[in-house]
Length: 97
Image (cartoon, rainbow, N blue to C red):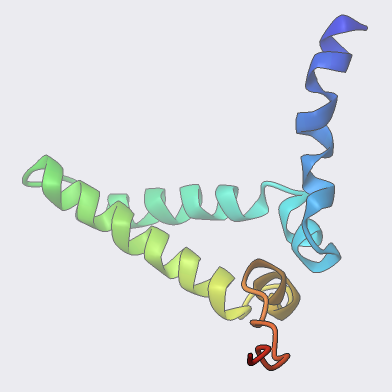
């Protein structure tokens, strides 16, 4: 019970996100797809000339994944999430003295 109580806040942190974001985070499908894509491209290249070239490949794949998430191109729209993270400034006129 002590372990459960210690981790309950971490387990419930997902509910701090809007519902459309929670739907995308409930599975590891995106992570599994990224791993498959890395393996597929690595098989084509076979031997990397140096570590930097391997890091560039991983960076490019992660940028593609990020673009899919940030544009809402994959599995839903993130407008609600971004609106919540970046609220519009208050439009009430400032008091003048």
